[in-house]
Length: 253
Image (cartoon, rainbow, N blue to C red; front, side):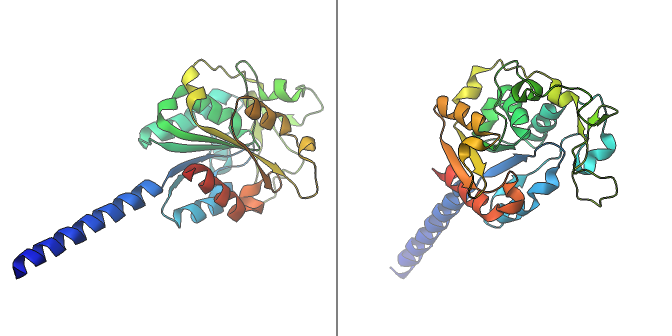
């Protein structure tokens, strides 16, 4: 009789342990963050730390020619180059059930990624990001002409705040072709991915005045949830805790 109780006790402990392990494993997610123009994977370092501290896996690749890959900067880098940067991380790391996040210019990239391999993506999240339609480009969306008013050297665009004497990590010149290239979207399965748009609005400002409000409205018209976060355009730097909380709420709902 004593041995029977012992076996029963062991079985119960094993079942409880398995149930707990299953619950823990299913509550964790795999995130891939696609950064905005001129920056790099380094900008999401704090987000990475906060999410991995609770057991999530995080990938934050740097797009070709930016961040620590600035030595690869070239006038030949296209929007498709950056889309393939992310697609290949997903394929070569064999990622599935992925939470794909795009910030700012990264919205152009993740849209192309979702069109390429929608079956790998569990949820798609835009953070103050471009939400393009087929045939659009950054230039066509913003209405900004590529002319002498822009500071362009050797096919790279220089923002006003970019200075060579700054020490890394820092923003760097961005390949101009990535702004000019039209995105081509051919896969209707992309629109079946559960998608959420986060509009960041600085304290005291009206959402309608935000540069990305038009993209939040596009998302709303598609029937996607649109959330608002009180932060500047770079919440991964200015409001990482608040952003992570919002991301986890999106993923678990």
